Length: 473
Image (cartoon, rainbow, N blue to C red):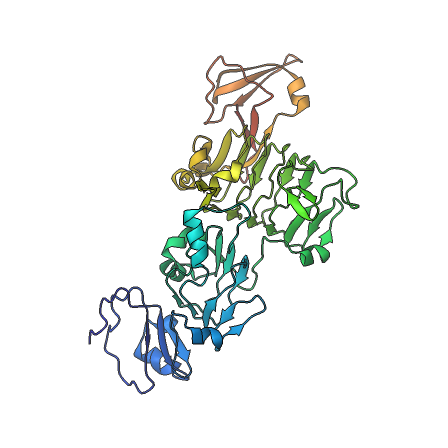
């Protein structure tokens, strides 16, 4: 029996209770089929009749209405949650969300996300005709449950600010089929531990504050805000060097960004109040950097992003005027952002990641990731440098400028030949000679002089061996 063979747009079907046999390979080639509705208490029977389709079986009551179309009757009989989101009476269909919603977790048990749920036709018209206005917003993050089987037409149309769709671990293949146009926004997360990058007033009221005045969530898993020393009773002096608490998983939006607040509103026209942060150590437990986390940290010179960080938010380093280098260790890193229209002009918000970083010279990335990251950061392709030491089990431990006392101890620093190849020969004021090999990415040649005020010392580590050093101008 081949009734349903190769119906490529065939997405769901309702099967009756009295069915006794089903032909072999009846759904062969139905690549879009995600939902097979079966009568309640018949799960065991249909698992036998449809081997290989167990993950698509959904039990229903009554008429098994799992339509993606929303009717006036649906809305009249809807169940509404505390956020104003409307579901069908049985809570299996997501019908409508309010336009002011920013971050939302769809309830477990939802099977269908109906057509145009997160869009608004009037707003969409304004979007294409007038462009976005400053201050306009829409849905930013969505958390999906395991239970979703069907996503309706244009469910996420006109969502220019949508940055992340969080899905349960192990469901990426399923959601990539249903959301093929949003693959770059899908991020797997433990469904029992979804941590938001947004900070609420309640978060700050219940926060734990360290000795530097930095606020964390009560469970210490989210860094909420590093308060300006000018307006905090907890901070006695500006923060210049800071190590983020071990165990922190999320650095929230604007954590180190200090804007002025006038009459209850953020005044974006003025620069950051406090930008004294020079160095920051991010622990290996961090998995996400929110939007604007280090924006306008004008004294920040270099930063290392640990292996477990999977997402970096929009404008994370915008305005970091002295930032010269950043090291990214995760080959699967994703940068939040999208193409949006502002004042009728098309803008790529990913490009704003390093906006204003006029001294950025190097973005170190893992070997083999150049094409992938270049596609995400096309405006910074000239700064991308693949670290090619991993093949010998060497990994980047540190990148830093030379310390003041190191510079003062050197008489001259000239590139010459050594047993390690092209190296910098440091003639010390004491008369001693020291050699450090040049980085593979250096453009200096024999006879060139190294400017120690801008050069960087790279430390490479390997288990069981002493650290080795390289110089990058």
